[in-house]
Image 1 (cartoon, rainbow, N blue to C red):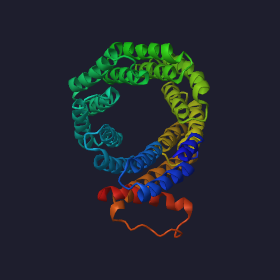
Image 2 (image 1 turned 90 degrees about the vertical axis):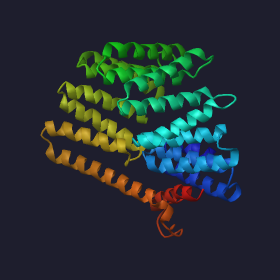
Image 3 (image 1 turned 120 degrees about the vertical axis):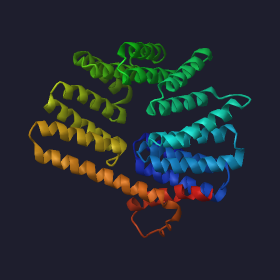
Image 4 (image 1 turned 135 degrees about the vertical axis):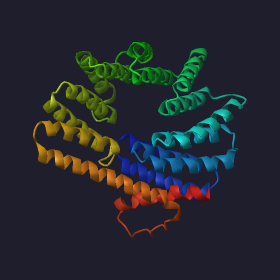
Length: 364
């Protein structure tokens, strides 16, 4: 697993996938019902999530959960943590009806533990709050987020990044309701905590500035939005480097401000940079890449460059079709015979390997 971690850190997704796949196969031979197999499956699922393959991640996390239930007990901390991962993967796919009972079950298990893992309780509260918000159950969402915030404030040595996430979620809730005056204090509180803990040049401070900038954009206070996003940009560049997916997403946020200012040529140029970084860091077939390509195509439309815009939309369409086919294959992986080794190239064989491993969830 160390090889997989090193490969992922270096941005070599294919090598990381191969290393994780090898670790799963070795664990299936040496530790078929134990924690090592679950750990390998979870690592494979994490890379799948990073690549935007959320259904595949869901199935891999589910299999890890099944292994840990048998090895450690259904209410063990390890099994409950895996259950939260399954719920999180469902949430990423907007499968709210599937995610809600999983988060609820995990929360019940955590509350009955002798020593509660508060960080996992907060993860459940965040997930349930997101589900309630999506279902327009506003009061329930606020209660979840406020309860998470209360746990943070009462706990000694709380997870700083987690409290910042909670504050952002509260700010996002009020922003979604156009209640900007109530949202802004949460964002600035998150910023102050980030600066106090990680310094003004840390990535957490930059993320908080992004939140305030996006809130100003939604209010059409575009000069203020641009100033905050430009203030965050060198911080992110210094903290993470330009070759980072988060930096690409930041450029997209700034591009949205340019778009609202009718600076279409600058938007297109910024999105070209964002797409290039995202393709290198996330992979050329990530859903975020497709979204950026479509945004850049809109900007090119306004510049009367229809051929280039059509080409970008076609690339985005191809990515989405590939994702659709992969998700369909993953959904039926438990009944798909595994191709023999050597029948396909290494590059082609990777998705099948993932699907076969994930598909084993049905028999776990």
